Image (cartoon, rainbow, N blue to C red; front, side):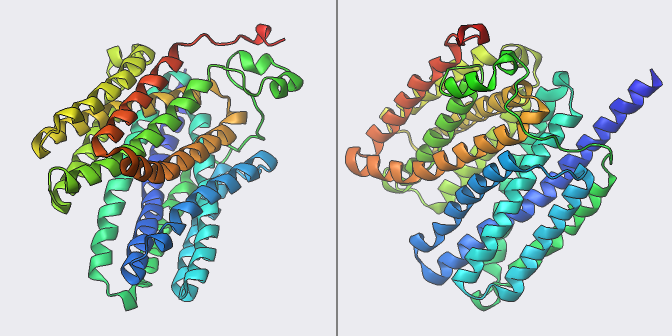
Length: 407
């Protein structure tokens, strides 16, 4: 009993260390990405120039995915995390000394982004390794909350720094970033030294693990229990990204509000998302996640149809807050399913693949929103986004193809 208790205490201890280091390290990445974008826009006033950095994020996720499918670093998680944080520090310092031109910034930032994307996937595997299935919903919800808070805090501080520093001193933001990484590096030295990453295979915790490699190739596009995870996440990322851009247009062009009102809306949506990620721990919600997710996706579609009433700013707040709440509830649900469905020997590549899909969906949603707004107008564009949610919601209820039925 004492041995079991000690093991559980160690896993809880490892999770706390992971949360703290994840917040600090992710803050550094978010701060750097936002600050670079703001400074380069202030310098060039070119959206084409700053659009390079989101593209680098997509490229880095794709590169890290192929690295994960071919290689596994056989060091302990402790050593691996420590080295990765030190590399992030080195990349930030490289930007300080050598990031004078756009080409050098892009080159260094690409290397930084690839290593950071890899670090995120190993963190995902580490979470799987230290978390029993019955605790995964709670830990995923906490982790999701941390990730949301990082974006809010990192973006705000980056904006403050970008306004405070003159353009000729913009390289000082790289020093700010570099100062962050020693903290998670030291923290990671205290995690359990016996835990190591696993070589990645296409294995699930369910019937898919019984499928032969030949059958897996044959049935690559077969609908399985994992399909709604990827389709649902991509749909929310794509439609949510498009809706975000349409919302900005609605605020400025329909209700004639300004940047302050838009920032208030963004903050309210961020708070609603943070609440939703923890709300999943309510027993009734946790026990009925699949049904609630289906109803929720239909609900988001219906909520977007309220735009027909051309709501004023004060009515737009509860509409978008509710939409953000349900979207985050669904995204947290999909993350939980991903971690419960796949074994440790598959979680790193599957998590990485999901990130690739999300980044591509989010990136392509912006030009899609611009195109449909120009073609249809703001109000019809919102309605189209609502219809897309109606189309996606039923996928969670479709019958899953069993292993024995795959031939």
